Image 1 (cartoon, rainbow, N blue to C red):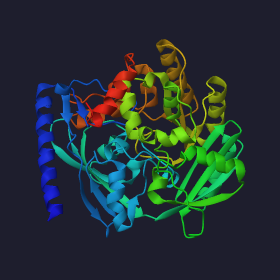
Image 2: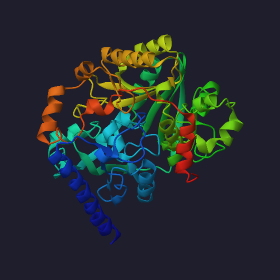
Image 3: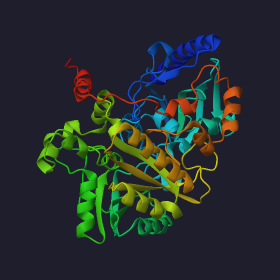
Image 4: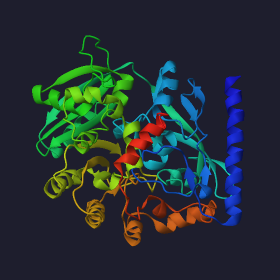
Amino acid sequence: MEMKTKHRQHKQKVSAVQRQMTAFYKAKQQVRMYHGESNSTRVSDADRQKTVDVSSLTDILEVNSDERYVLVEPNVPLDALIQATIPFGLMPAVVSEFPGITIGGAVQGGAAESSSYAWGCLHEIALEYEVVLGNGAVVTASNKNHPDLYHGLACSYGSLGVLTLIKLQLVDAPKFVELAYVPVKSAAEASRVMTLVAKNKPLFIDAIMFGKEEGVVMIGNKANDLTLPLARFSQARDEWFYLHAQNVASKHSNYKERIPLQDYLFRYDRGAFWMGKHGYKLFHIPFNRFTRYWFSSFMKTRTLYRFLHGAHLSQQFIIQDLCLPKASVQEFVDYVDSRFGIEPLWLCPLKTDKEAWLAPNYLKSESVINVGLWGAFHGDYDAFIDTNREIENKVHSLGGRKVLYAHCYYEEANFWKVYDHERYLAIRKKYKADDSLKNIYDKVTVKKKYKASVIKGWMAILKDAGLQ
């Protein structure tokens, strides 16, 4: 009965979206979507009168354990989805690292994680989409039904249609992950180790380079040995994962431990990988085990994103994910080291996407590695733009693509050198998006300077906590 109720309520929500889109289409008014919270670093300044409100699409309609799929609305966050599927012994084959990332955001934004060496980005486990088109019509897109729309929607950032329901593939969920740590001395060695261990088909592979000559590859499998040391990363008393990994790699040549599944999946949540450390610098707070414990509740990604958006501080940081052919990774890491000195770097291998032509891993390479380049920027606004464009050009010259959730400063001609403009325009026209939905370049490109305000950042956090 509950499932029928949810399906009925879903139809009512979709009808509301249809009415909005039909009105905008008739008026030939291009609009954006209002989702609620966002894990993008771009600040939203959209006029709410010119947005389609999809913030109510927050339900899980069905978990089908027999056919191993879930029907989920796009604004369901990953931690809620995991909590719904685990009782069935199942989980999505790809789970991005931050619990507040929504399913729709992950599909539209090219989200990946440590299972992506085998599965690719999260959109590659989407079996079908329900979509409201630019003219208000509803279609179901899959590999067999409207395949051009199905492959085009991935990483299109809401510029081809409005996602209202996603059917995701599920796989077995272990209770514990056995994580092995293998120290490495270079990004090239990390790439070789990850390629080698991938042949054994583990559940998870990723790596961190703490410096140019110091790193660790981490390999996750189902934990069968319950005598292994137990590690957790979700509680205030637990160490941030990247610091734990660095400590383990400095002391052991081959170390294994077991981690509860949800602690593993969201191991980078506390501290947002390592970017939370900059918050301590901003407020002149010592960065040590005690202060990490004391301020733990402020260092989870949901709170950090609220502060980042409220304070408009994102133009003080380089926050980029860059997908590169494996053969180019060491050159790019050397470039980052000599040009910016930003460390650590995250390395995550991805399966090449051969269909979703807007995806960051749609490359002419049999193997792709995502490099997470996240660190502070020191310079004025013009230098910030120049630096971002320099990175964009460098990645393109190495045969790679950036993930467009982040700041994009491409000049328009350079943007369309990366993506197939004619193909994009054709699919927008076919599915009635050109008159009513903003195009992808306009949606992902930052075109103005943000005015930073730490006070407004704190106000955003207090407002969310109901203290205003």
